[in-house]
Image 1 (cartoon, one colour):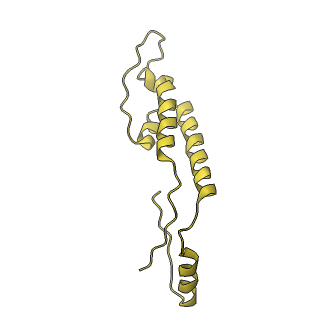
Image 2 (cartoon, rainbow, N blue to C red):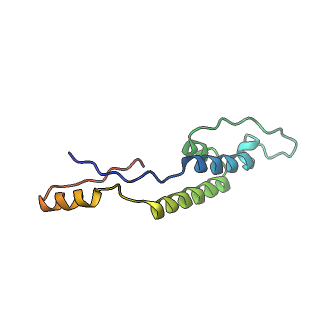
Length: 105
């Protein structure tokens, strides 16, 4: 089995920072669904950004989707194959060896 991996390009720290900022300002999660202006902001457990997104208001979820798309777009633009990957892929082609793509997503 052969492995060719792409250099890690997704900035997870930036993703968490931006998603947490959306969550911090999201009215629905900030007041646990109570829209009253006099409600104290409830503490929020921050963790998985995908799970956190599901707890947000529809507007907060849309803002998160924009952030996810932006970060993935940047990662794709900066993606590079590791040294030797092209030679390995040519070798596999010359031997008719099948390949597959595996991602973390």
